[in-house]
Image (cartoon, rainbow, N blue to C red):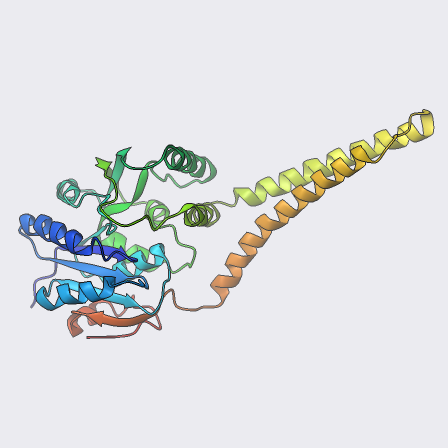
Length: 331
């Protein structure tokens, strides 16, 4: 019987042709130093450059490297999910291809896992090469998310982490579309520990998480793990209704018992704009949740695979309970 793989490294990629060869070499050096069996699962998330072609060349000379090639871009969190779906290791590491998270930290994570922890996540003590705005907004987001949810999501962390096989199996059972992996890991409740590290500057290329995508991820995180926005909307609506009723009584009293009249429409227009703006904002919150319900009811697969490289029939059989409907097979 073939010995099970000890460690699977999942690497989502999107337009990373400038860095992918260096990423592979550093990962291989670190993993070989472990003295254990391993695999590297690259997931090409619809790259428009030569990223997939470069990984295919690597796969041709190194059978421990595997490629999952999407039919189009499905997003970073979905790519991470696909990598976990196709991993077969006793432990699984999630790491981005840009080398901001140093692969050498994997050795510390494995050591921590051997102490009995099911999840070992990287905690950023410093973020090099990032603007003051991004650092500040990230810190505010993590603390806001923690205050709004009952799930204890560690602050100052990303998806860079090592997970035991049982944690990976638990995550592959969660098929919601609006995914926030680090929150899902915390929700699962397995024993966690951290490894501190300094996040480096991006090795090459440009960030794949501009402000627009960061806002989208933040919205996914909040709506996936908290209904407080809906509760806040209800409370705010009640307070506005109460305020409007009180104001109506004041106006009626002025009309019947005093000679005071409103000289113009300025105050009326201001109040109308305020109330209408808040009403539309509350409808937007409701619409966000309803839209997510609509997406879930479609029942479509999370992703579609156009090709796979270096996956054996044994590996496919090992994944048969978690393979999403619509994921294609390859070599």
